[in-house]
Length: 420
Image 1 (cartoon, rainbow, N blue to C red):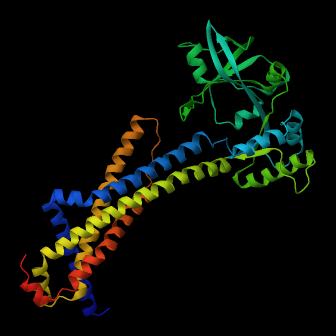
Image 2 (image 1 turned 90 degrees about the horizontal axis):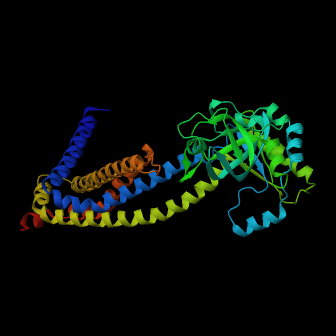
Image 3 (image 1 turned 180 degrees about the vertical axis):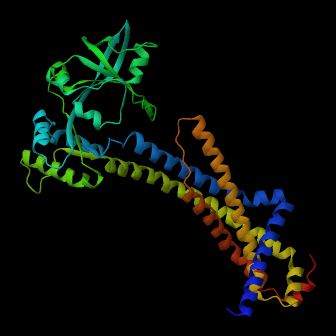
């Protein structure tokens, strides 16, 4: 690069910095006018960031609390993920229950899984020390569910294979159950009555928390064989299949699907009369729902952006009128059309970018307050911040073109004669 080219680049850089500084000084001088000018941009960017923060926070929350079925685990159930109500009714009629024989077949014949367990659940009543607790989730489990589930033992132990073999009357309590029927007491070794049958408490689980206001700690684990002895085989089971690793999940799902279809004598054209549920399918359903929310908010944000852009354009047109003599003087001293146009484009872009930055700051502060004071999950991804400021700057460029072109086309002689 020769010295002339370097000089032109330095001159252009100085010119852009000067134009940006002029825009900032104008905003500082006319604070109220600048705020009203940028209000549309601030509102649109703040709305965009808040919506993205809400969706990102809920996606993360859903992935950790709802779609997290365990480490590389998928479920074989009577009905899979069905969004259409009529389709669900049809599936209830068409699909057969998942039976103990299905579990034994998957456990004994599948080659790829690391482990195959089973669980079944029903609401029940728990009583201890003259305290009753209704609608507790009574879960019958095999011992290997401990290695698949997200619940972890805080004290004591989990249900064992020996407990299942001997139909032991032992129970592991969720933290909510412990807090309500054994307040300020150690429940290990104590007796609880579950739907009238006495069980010895052998373990307590760590608290998980709530999902959309619904407690995840209101449960009792008992051996699945004990559960079946109490409640019978009339309810469909849930089979938990743990793959050897994330890279084996799809192959393991396909092996389980093939075996289930063979057991039920389904032809190649028949639909599955059972469901396979994995974390990715749950997340896919959830993201399709949040995507609908995001699409609706994009329309609202777009309206705010257009309003903000129109206001900036009007302000810049007023600035062209106010500075007509200045433009004429600059042209008479040798300024070219592109220089005048670039100056006004830079001013418009800087104003819009500043509005975007303010909107991001406001939204971030609101997201932090909401996250810290309410159960609503909020997370502001850095990508959303970059996109928001980029979009607001693009609005300034788009709506600054017309005022900039109008300024660049002014006749210098007529401009010098102009009286404001």
